[in-house]
Amino acid sequence: LFNHVVIIGVGLIGGSFALGLKRAGLARRITGVGRGAANLNRAVELGVIDDIAADAGVYGEADLILIATPVGQMARIMGEIAPRMKAGAVVTDGGSTKADVAALARTHFGNKLPRFVPAHPIAGAELSGVEAAKVNLYEGKKVVIAALPETAADAVQQVRAAWQACGAKIYEMSPAQHDATFAAVSHLPHLLAFALVDDIAQRPNADQLFQYAASGFRDFTRIAGSSVEMWRDIAVANRDALLGELDTYLAALTRMRAQLAAGDGEALAAVFANARQARENWLASIEKSEPPASPDREG
Amino acid sequence: LFNHVVIIGVGLIGGSFALGLKRAGLARRITGVGRGAANLNRAVELGVIDDIAADAGVYGEADLILIATPVGQMARIMGEIAPRMKAGAVVTDGGSTKADVAALARTHFGNKLPRFVPAHPIAGAELSGVEAAKVNLYEGKKVVIAALPETAADAVQQVRAAWQACGAKIYEMSPAQHDATFAAVSHLPHLLAFALVDDIAQRPNADQLFQYAASGFRDFTRIAGSSVEMWRDIAVANRDALLGELDTYLAALTRMRAQLAAGDGEALAAVFANARQARENWLASIEKSEPPASPDREG
Image (cartoon, rainbow over all chains, first blue to last red):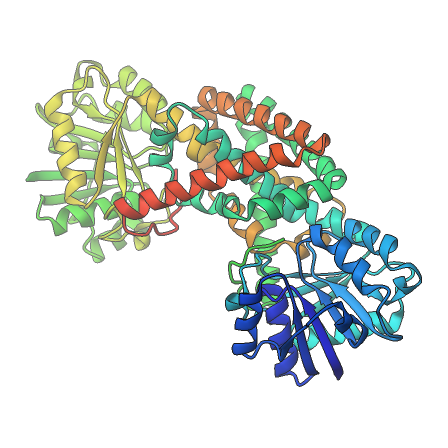
């Protein structure tokens, strides 16, 4: 049980975390912090949070603090939290990239660094306000905890317990492993989808082309409907891993181009067949382990 | 009204065409041709066709013939049809690429060439047997008629009428325009999705990576679940247009790589924002003009 939880950024991620903790009876009091007074007032009305912080003094009272803001705001927030934290308090975040957040924490938390637990809930990431918050957002979803070597084991344990109370399944890896993994299966596909739609949109005959785009194109490019600012920040924050993935993919496409130019249908078929089989195996494995995923935006 | 329609390949495409014509009262008799006796018998049981052709003599009796087989079988079939066609009969096809089909027709139809109407229904293309056929498969879907300069206007008009009776909307363009258009909005995305899944499946840590793939990855790669043989044939048949698209896309990715390497978040954001806006406009335009698309496989 957390006596006092403070959530900075009471949107989809932070608000749903608050609702999950409340349902589990794991938080005696939840205080919201944020820039949008209207959003915070609405969060109180909806019962997502109990009250609104008057100032940064609230950080001195908290047992658990979740920073659920864009990564760009975290340096300032960490700088406000660090000098005020009480002994034993735990701070965590919900950012989509982890090496950059870990580096910020190293800069700002000083000797409180062991109390900071970098984490990434894989379930929606658009900060679309508290109205979007759902008590069951995290049910069956993954949360990656990307602890530093310095992170205290009991702090990790408390963050695990909080997310598990929301229904999430906890996975652990280092910040670098996290960023390498998501560069491959999330960040690169987003870049590829944005690039394809932009490429077509730039053509003089774009309207004609879009007219014949069908359901395959729609699904392939769904992630190109994601938040521009968020994906800009993710791309820049995870630049090194993403460059590596992009280069590997460019090499794969270049091989495929050579097969196509040679009219080597059997080589292309081997790639297609391997992909099709791997995807089938993947879908079968997630069907076994998870309820059907809802099409939340990632990040 | 067609007195006698012959459909070669009574699967999803051919069977749904038969059902659509029957519902519209546009076909007095429909005869099925195909290699799978069990499938043809089932098609009769289901009332999709009226009877099964005994031999190629049936082509001499038909008013309208639909070749709904993989493109690889079309040369043989055209060679059987051409010498037997009666005056005024019309032949059309349902292949996913049109320049290659047009070239085959030019080779095999001789002085009957004006009676052949190349066409491509954009609604499902997996030849998964007559059980998959649906009377409403083509409702609100597009059919592209890709006539040759030689094609007779009355033959085009009959094929239009047949597809319109199935509920389809008819678009016309040349075979080369067709292939260029679908290279951009369908064939390239399929290659990109196959390449990404294959790329990840080849890694030593593929299982770990797939474990963290979420709904964005699932939708981006849905088309990598498509038929291997069909997409091999499409890629090879539309090689030239597809190479052009692949090169344009490789250039776009290479530009994006440079922006990423330079940490130029604003340049990336401009690409993302253009893509996001273009996709929103596209979705708004199809919502205005079409019922929601079902996730049929394309080709």
